[in-house]
Length: 328
Image (cartoon, rainbow, N blue to C red; front, side, top):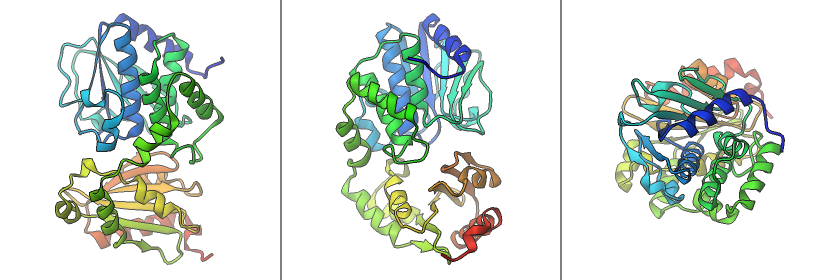
């Protein structure tokens, strides 16, 4: 099989990982299916080589992702000093991991176009559907071990960031690698159940509360909902327990909607999560507010009251994408 470009960086990463006897892996804050699946796949493959390999994240793993193989072994907290190497998985910037390893060799694997080259080796490919796709390629091209558990985790990573192979970032390569992972033991139906059908009833009640805040822009092309702290408190949920892609998919399912937004109440203001069907580059929108992401998925923080936050984002969208104001 012919693999993609950046073979020099991949070769350097593969050599370093084989050279090290211990490797720590860390994901971005508020970890999602792509970084968790990718980190688990890499960790398990390295362990099959007899290496000490562990994942340390500053934020807890979302409940539904705890059903992935060995996800219960992910540690919460800072990375100890006794590792030969630290791999930053999809962190875009060092601070986005919440980790600050000192005096250790670092590797950064990411697919964000705004990603910073902060590590000793930086493998960044913005056109990739997912980091899971990149990690699979690394393992296969350089002969790292692959088994059913590794395949399941990497398949989950690709599945997550392509929206179950529905988003426009799904490429022929994504589908080819997914097929190879199925051949290696991943079960598509099982992964689909983990990612899409593992909600608790409290999350469905939360969905009900969030949809009660549903608002549409006058053009009908923007849909938004709010996830307020009081909703979580009433249902005895923590923000890291909540999977919000379900409500995003509901908003995106409205035919005329081009941009879907969730305003998640945080300590100061809101964390705004954005999704696009493709016409609007929400990555550029997020960057305008100091955030970042991809063409179709991005986010940023906004320290304003709810109504002001929504109006501020509306104004910026209308400025950047004038077609939003047009009816029909």
